[in-house]
Amino acid sequence: MSTEFTTRITEAVVASLDGTADPRLRELLAALTRHLHAFVRETEPTTAEWERAIAFLTATGQACTDTRQEFVLLSDVLGVSMLVETINSDDRTGATESDDRTGATESTVLGPFHMTESPVRELGADIDLVGGGEPCVISGRVLSADGTPLPGALLDVWQASAEGYYDVQQPDVQPAGNGRGLFTADDEGRFWFRTCVPSPYPIPTDGPVGDLLRATARHPYRPAHIHFIVSAEGHTPVTTHIFVAGSEHLDSDAVFAVKESLVQDFTETDDPSLARRFGIPNPFRHARFDLVLNTSDAPFARAPEGA
Ligand code: BEZ
Ligand code: FE
Image 1 (tube, rainbow, N blue to C red):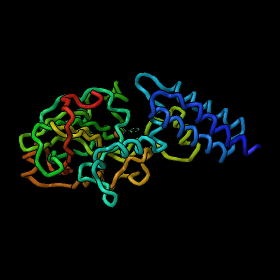
Image 2 (cartoon, rainbow, N blue to C red):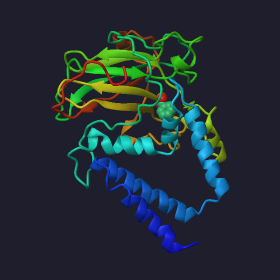
Image 3 (cartoon, rainbow, N blue to C red):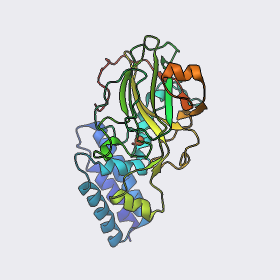
Image 4 (cartoon, protein in one colour):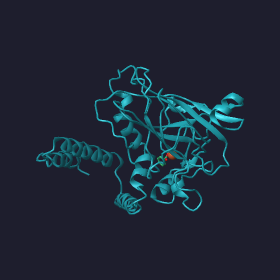
């Protein structure tokens, strides 16, 4: 192998990009070339290994349909989705090096199951249309980073059933809209709704990403969580989850999406006045937390992302 050639080819490919009109595209392609070539120089794949890699990427593309995005799943299990999400998230905007949070709720991955519009529901409604799980209440406030409540904030919520499946995965078992709700915070920014305590569940493993997990002896599970997209006039929306404290797989999420600040207690509660207030039989589990948004000059879109 000629070291001179393996270095020169990288310079030649990067130079071939000089005519790229869009400077950002040129920067991205040049960096991709340098990193990809460095990977090949470091690992020296055999021709058979390179053909295997191309076959894997081909199968990943072929597994994609209108309702399934295997490339996004690949990006998720390699931790790239969380890197991109975190680099772009508003909770770091304006933050300092020593404290890279601004106090806004941290973001995490959108995931593939926000593919259908959440039904509009009244505050206090039960999003668990199937039953059978442990009943719980989720309550809190939507606040601006300075602590001001945000009346009229929109909360788009979705979660898997107590058995660990989203409604769209079991159209013959669950009614459409099970585990989903679009809520509007009240005039003090408060929200509350009923549901069942979610369970850990596996990401889809019947495609090339499943093969990758098996080949690397990795499990496919995500810890129990509820998804939120929260938006309010004059504020940057946040796409996030709350994770159930004590859930299995919190320290080994298949998509690396757990952030400590998002783990919440679902406290065992046996309180007649609270049960009456929330219209739920005792005992029940109760998760209370606030969702905090940073201010923004961007216009407010009433429709949540992806709806
Ligand atoms: C989810 O939480 O819905 C999810 C996120 C990433 C990959 C698969 C599922
Ligand atoms: Fe999920």
